[in-house]
Amino acid sequence: MTRPSTGGRIEVICGCMYSGKTEELIRRMRQVMIARQPCRIFTPRLDTRYSVGHVASHTGAKLEAVPVSSIKEVMAGVGDMQVIALDEMHFLEDSADEILACCQELADRGLRVIVAGLDQSYRAEPFPGMMQLMAVAEQVDKLYAICVRCGAYATRSQRLINGRPAPADAPTIVVGGLDLYEARCRNCYEPAH
Ligand code: ADP
Ligand code: ZN
Image (cartoon, rainbow, N blue to C red):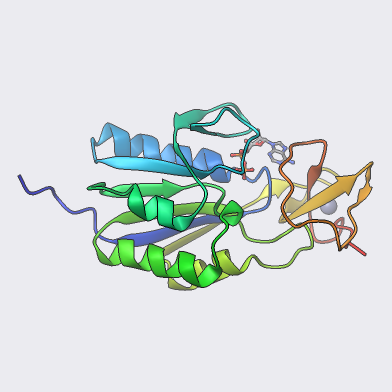
């Protein structure tokens, strides 16, 4: 039986922490599952905030996901899926070029590739992997949280250590929730020194 094609495409869901990226990924994948399209969700092993084997949003919505450490593991797990989703892309250990090449290959093969992740680090610097994917994606959605200081739309993830902005030389990737990160707007964001 030949399956109807979903059309190869790359969709990027980006934004700061708490902007609803995982919620949006789960919403899209629920639709795909209702339509009975063969699909699989992948999530970096590093993201240990929630039980392994799931993607989970801060609101508690969750779906089963395959834990991976690298984009090669995603490639190995694609099988004959029509749609794949990758959450928290910024946690993958691969270079931006490798991630780009693999996502392009999958979309060229006809897969719908949905990638969610932070667009900026806590230093408000773009994540190279997301930058490159956004350039080639068929669809890019940038989501916003609400700034916890002033109520404006938040685009940045403020990393705090003992209530103070984390220094610029702190590690880029630290897994954590509300105690470590706050959503802030451009005005309320305090740069790392
Ligand atoms: P992301 O994947 O972008 O980190 P999630 O989808 O996991 O976001 O969670 C989004 C949810 O986080 C929102 O629906 C809301 O319930 C919650 N939330 C917590 N803090 C904030 C905030 N400052 N602004 C907006 N939503 C927030
Ligand atoms: Zn603000």
